[in-house]
Length: 285
Image (cartoon, rainbow, N blue to C red; front, side, top):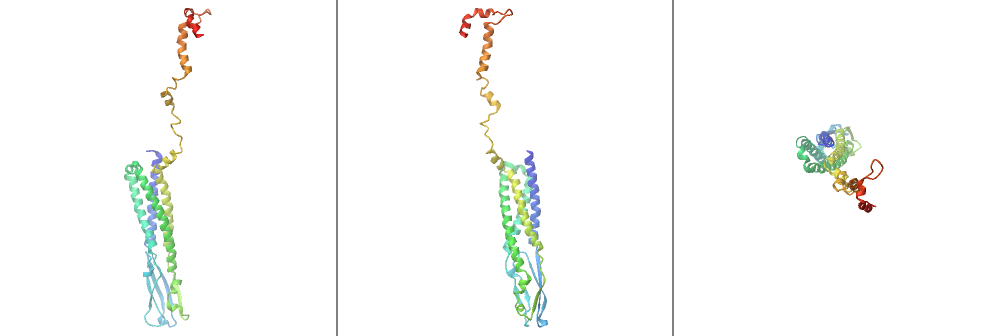
């Protein structure tokens, strides 16, 4: 196996290992999140006040199902209020892409290690791998952008200052409403960062898989000079190039004839071969 193929396969395996790790980071930081914020409503009648209203929310961020009880500052039972928004679609889509990316990376790494010959047979394996990798790279782009927008909306919907505006008692000036604790969303910010890191990793992995498909060699071959226009040196001998040389042919046939007809002797005269064949000499002249 050529060295560059071995190197490319090693890089593919390393890239898949890295994508597995970052895919775990991406879907775990988003899928395992739970947050909480606190508010206080201090009524003019202190007995009706609630100074520790705690609101909890978590993945998949169906905030319209999250509720809390707030005092009305008029006595009686507190009112039940719900948060606004349902951002489960973008969050679940992001987590789903992360899980499937992890599973595919693990499967691809197993193929590289155990069934490499089957993978390289007729280049079908690398070509399928390239298409699937391209799809995952695109899905990471879409899911990361969607989740970044969804997270922005989640932050807005869980901002205590905005939630306070939903409480009826806070509309009256004699009552005092304020936030006590903001939700910590650093883990969700990290999940978005991991999403875009996965996008970069899958695009890089796409290049390594492309080198295995054989398409690069096909594209490069279209720009190489044709071998038919530049025949190898052996083809000249096969075509009889040496036999068609007129100089070599005349030289090869002339020397025996000149030796038979005669030549110069030691005294400076012609040999008898020349004297015995005058007709032949006159024809040559």
